[in-house]
Length: 256
Image (cartoon, rainbow, N blue to C red):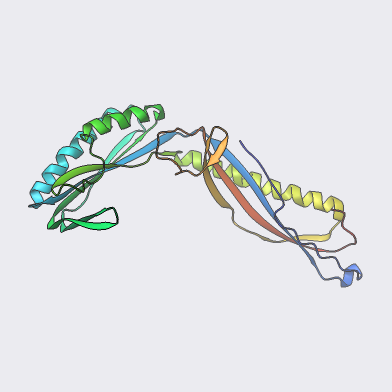
């Protein structure tokens, strides 16, 4: 579990007039906190696309053949009750297909049939991810993306792995991070109170917490989607920050 806090902004206004006549001072504090956990499962997806077929039936049949081969691989990696494989078919459509060749738009076919399938696996055996990717490449015949030199074709597009937490764990981390952020802001306030002796200190506003999410690799925080390679993060970190505004009656000099 990680925790950090810092005073991002503070405004203390002190009047030389008597306290009863003084304008209220204001303190704005931002508290931060963080909590982390090892990832609990990985989500991996791929799309199967068939384009430039003469009939809807031909497009659907070609797509189903490659999609079924990929699903068979995905099903082989379901080894826990929490693992699941989903397949979402797209509607067959008729359209003109184009692709970029360098900076030029190349027309592959005009008003031909397209069919799609979207496949996803969520698995808790995260270490199996590289093996899964290797077997999927074989299952889809090495196709990866559109072939600009062909018209009628069916190909696969691999997604990037997303390492995740189950909802209950994620809620627990958010709650922990929020509590630490609140404690951090309160500690800052107590430090200032001990040095400044505020009178009639009162809370004006408390914002809802804002959350951030990051992977942690080799001790360094990185964006959750900074890599498509099957590099397994050490931890998933949830950060929370909240803002407190306090009003007070100045009592004299403040020793910061």
